[in-house]
Image (tube, rainbow, N blue to C red; front, side):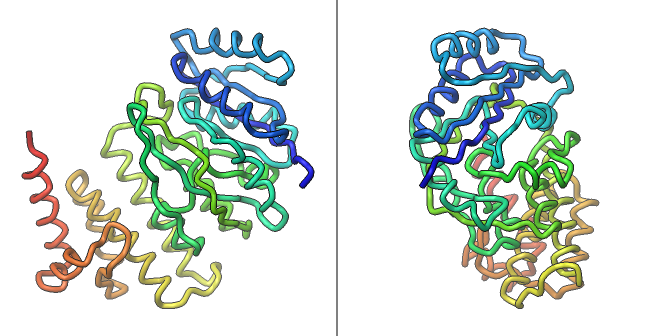
Length: 315
């Protein structure tokens, strides 16, 4: 197919050691690369010097370097969006990389889509492991966090702008908030078979950080909003099996939140009770746990599991 130019937005915060690798990975995109937009987000190291050196070594690659002082990757991505000129946009974190052919494979799937989502690798200390398997059903994927991620997806630029871009108030799970808003607007999602993105686990280079309690509460609140919409008349009709899996996802984030904010988690248990939910085998819900939940109740099983894990992992 004829190459479809795709602009790339890279937010950068103290990523001097890694941003060169992210930029190098774009050289392997076989003619699909548009311009690169690098947004400095209050770096105190030599991140932008590294970017300037890379640009000097690759004068044939259009690169815009700009800055955004509002803290957070979402603010930096929104700043980068102001410079995007292509129909599709690739967001790439400064500590992640794309493997050869990623853009080409996903660009071939864009005709009837507004988001193309794929799979990814984790990489820690040079060792790679498969990331999570993505879901075929969009609503199940949204609820379980199995609809790609920021970097392994492609987004139609106009669709992102239509829903107001990235929410700059969110410390984490920002792409799922964005994709949920796209889903509410009726945007189309297309699954790709690729696993051509590498998420490198370097916590120091992440712009989006926040305390664990807040992160869990945000994920919980997002799933409550998802369920409220997905089970309403505004959403496409869901069969009972899909509804069960969405409730399973809410159960997961509820039990995940409970040790940190039990009063908020109680709201989740009340919603689940309203739907007479009983956990079934699913993501993060193995058969042994489901069997235990049927014996002693889902809430008690979740608390017991938490105590057992704390005992095992205690130093």
